[in-house]
Image (tube, rainbow, N blue to C red; front, side, top):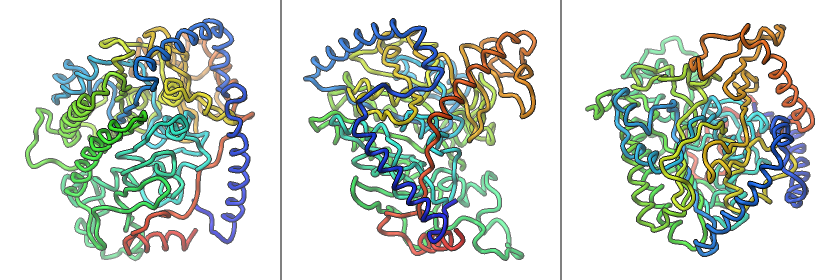
Length: 556
């Protein structure tokens, strides 16, 4: 909650400025010393450091050879992050038959890629995106959950994003699509390292669920005025109103809301127009960036398949309102990859396509998506919430049609992109970086991951720890560690049969992992979430958006 500017907020702002000054001084000497990793990584490095160091020499030579073959330039990076799709929902012809919707273009991309069979994310979209952008568990940046309407919070300016790091070594950067890192000016992508950005201020709960069409589909209750009389509604400010929709901006400038007139009601048709606009802009940015001499980082985060209204005519055998949008999204992935080929730069472009977390299981069945192999979905620490498909394509360096069962976490992309781009020296050395450099896994294939563990949070609470094929759900407060349920996710992918007795040996080992994690937190405390007045830095706020902001500020 944003503090009132005349009380706690003034103190907070002073503290943030002091922290920013400290971090700036530290950033100037970023290359001095080693990257600060979590205790568990250091525990592994003590066992395998010599091997990894030898590998790193080989990797350095391989990356240098690739650059030499490309005129001395590092690869371009195209990162496509899809919203709320569980493991197995895309990339497989067999699963297309099981689910009743087709993903031929994503299947082809998978065939041309290294398929990461054990990619872990965070349980919901905002934390996953923070983890990728910063290389840190989102809780370390104060990011704990998904927010829907005005909150006056967001990714702090003190966090260092992968876009900012790539800028340091000459990359041009663009972001298109979902962002969901906050409604304050410092959190917008064009203030977090992107040269240009087109993005919605909030997310699909506002954009597709808070509409009359979603109400008619019986997927939203109580929001739209036409759904009830409201005879006894005294508080006229209870329901969100005046929310900013989509904006566009360049680095150093103000954002501007597009395609929304004062007093206009947001509709499903406008949501679909927004999706098409982002697809068109992603291709436009790809063509623009590829035409320049510098390497590029293009981040495209589609809003589809998240959708809550039925089409007039279903296009898939499944017919669910999200399943149909999966087929639309697949078409768009095909268009994007065709556009990449037409630039002539596909061979030396690292393409990653993945989902941010499991399905929105609250709409399982009617949406057309389901849990499939792993139990659980969005917001949950269960495998179904944090395991997603992920495909890595780089013809110049990665074997097509390969797969890896190694554990990898979405935060690893931060460190790996930096290494591949030659930007490792710009990774901050004043905070914990959870992301592990997985270049060896990308270039050398299966068996070369540098992690066999993941800590899984739900919000600020550590809910489970994964180690190899074992997963411990954290015991309830007051219960001994020996009582914690431990699952073998190979034998029990749905986490339904705890092996408490069979796995008693693991209790002490998991507790040691927890202690190593806690010691790192104690030594390097979490940084605060960014806070400010919402909707700052938008030059054409509609009157209703200005009113929403004023009302919000009035009680802070």
